[in-house]
Image 1: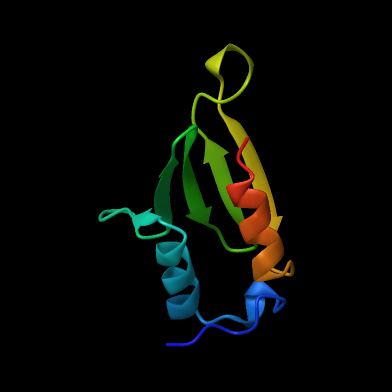
Image 2: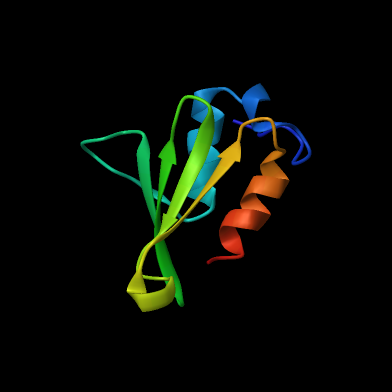
Length: 90
């Protein structure tokens, strides 16, 4: 399955394409709660959530005092913009 151009808003991607994209980013889907995805990079780890109006990402123990940092991205943003923001880390 081919993904649309990276400058396509995420709301123009069918769910299977969003799931494929997340797998390509190195995310693993939660087996119990299918809208949750986990990703781990050398310097951080996070949980992504596919919500109704946006994607949420919660960077685990990344803030001041080891607090979590959460960011939300509307589906109207391009896939490339969301990918860049997520992979930039906390």
